[in-house]
Image (tube, rainbow, N blue to C red):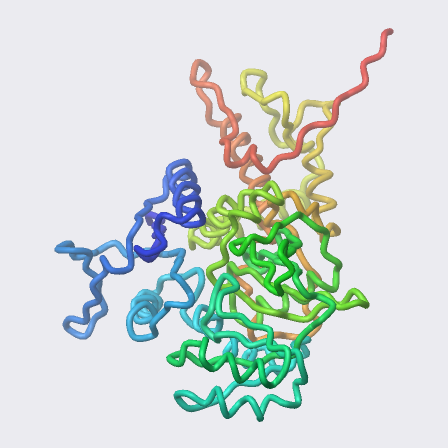
Length: 448
């Protein structure tokens, strides 16, 4: 069965850095791995229900090959449940695995909705008030009195630090009534003084922290967004901070997201916001990373053929290592083995040293990696109790990725050794496998 991946985005943001980079990364990887790829804008898709069956049209084309996995980038503040989410629900009902899922996106459309989802799970949150009705901002001036002053006022659908105010007192809060938009609800939030003008942006892909960045305001304002002139720099994140970000990601059902944390004087964190359509131009620059490449790798790991092949290869490698102590086959001298990598001891020439088996043996005990490395194999602590929001597909996809690629390399070379004709072509490991194999340690040469 042919593997199919789609990238769907909104015309209004299609030329922005994150979308351009994700498109580039997906095109490269799909071409390399022979995966059918298609790029679509949200307004090009027509939804159909004919003869009781769901269908799609793009322009005049009736789509017959539906995606197995689709990455979605829509402008979260502008998401409309009766248009954008309708398209995503349609694809999901047709069996497409979406990244992110419609409900996960909705959880982050409204900042108060996000806090509603996180409440009751032991997640540290600043005290927050909001209101019902069309325009009750003035009424909330008295209702929010318990939060004290200064108090943070945010547009519940704001983004990039816009429509965020710090009211010094009740009089100042009353003046804001003349500045705010009255067609959107606002929330009133406890002011975290220790974190004024700075926060920590944590980016997660596949439920794993891939890096963190400290953002600082340069003009004394409360917001630290880089889009408002703030500066970002790579920073290490404590284990408590990582666990908190992963917990938030799992509760909201996110695959790819940015979690903004406020740090208290004692080093602990509280959650500020969560972004389902996280931007990463400043993050890439500050951390020296390729977030788009990491996202693309994760997308391809969700393909059904990949998951099935991974489980099959794992069972083959496991049974081989348990039942055989002698090598079954040796790579002929004609097989090309790049000098910078090596093959596991089971099929290496006698006396060769190998870093791959060391990597496999230590992979299960290594739970952290350098913040500057893009590594989907980083695994956090397993949940003590069953969590209904825990994404087992994401866990399997990321946790066995490295071992699977190594196993594929072994099987590739074994197949070449057995089947190659005497005068046939030489064999070389594919680039997508070499990418995950660590370099061989250099032997010390001594004179005899």
